[in-house]
Length: 190
Picture (cartoon, rainbow, N blue to C red):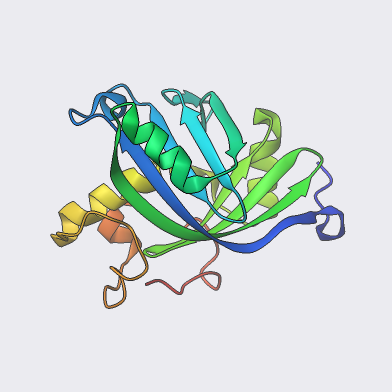
């Protein structure tokens, strides 16, 4: 794969996101490995994700996402259907694209992450081109990592917001993961 830096296009500059995850009061979606999310960045988007599955070292899942006109009305509709907000998370995201493969640079309150989306055969070459160790890929959601962190550090807050992490410093070991990049990259962690 020719992944020269000049061929990558910035398709979304660094943008702040607020994500609301919904579930039933009994956690039916989470137990089934499904996700119902309402995201607000430059637009509002409603997303449904099926249960994830392992695909040759990557994670695959069906995702249905579409833009909604009004974030608040969409939230009211979802809640009227019997779902409730069970988790709020914030992040900054930048997106780059090259020949159908996207690289997302995510800054969350507990660290910085790279997510690569595309055809299975393009993922590993892009990771290697970025200097990432494929063996250290994290097949867990940001919510799962947050739950690991809450347990290991005894955190009592429910939501993954920058305000909640204002005074909390996190290491990869707190989430049972390791850096996948080279030692001189991305070592700032909150």
